[in-house]
View 1 (tube, rainbow, N blue to C red):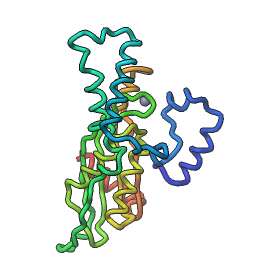
View 2: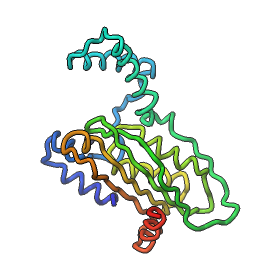
View 3: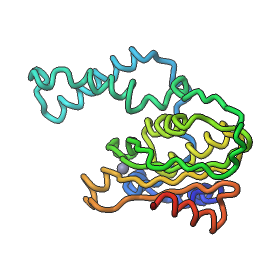
View 4: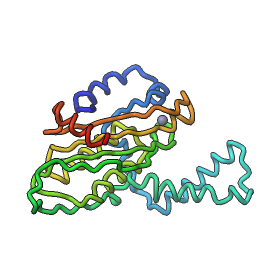
Length: 230
Ligand SMILES: [Zn+2]
């Protein structure tokens, strides 16, 4: 479980680690995605143009022949994919707008949305993280459309990420939009930087959790695990 306290601890334990250690061990430095101050000073079209130029340089440096028909369009395709798809969640303009509804049926029990598939990318290696998010909340008197839970997950997944931060960002957004502390987020994900390279472990997955408010007690946690595993 990642709590504010753990984060502080994390900050301290990062001292003395090299940049390589941080990346290889998938440590992270902040709960917010580290963004530069003028991150959106450039238009999306400009961004795509720049990324395309820079990516063709990477392809050239590793020795690929960019005049080949198969490779020619790759820099543009990668640029478009970065800006419009897999990193589109960096741009606050793309944040899902969530309308709250009154909980007319007075259903004040737990709602669990499980097995929300997402694709993200590890910020240390820029290779995919593929996982499932399970979300639970207890209505404070307001509810949101089920598809919005999914959209919130996708928005924060479409960034260079670390799984702990993704978990917390989703939880914080849910707490804000649902106006309650009673939210839980459980993420089970496979990191391709662990399976396709490095240690090449193809079977392990990583589980991270956030249990807020009423969910932060052993019997509730057990109850949630039952819903998710069945
Ligand atoms: Zn990685």
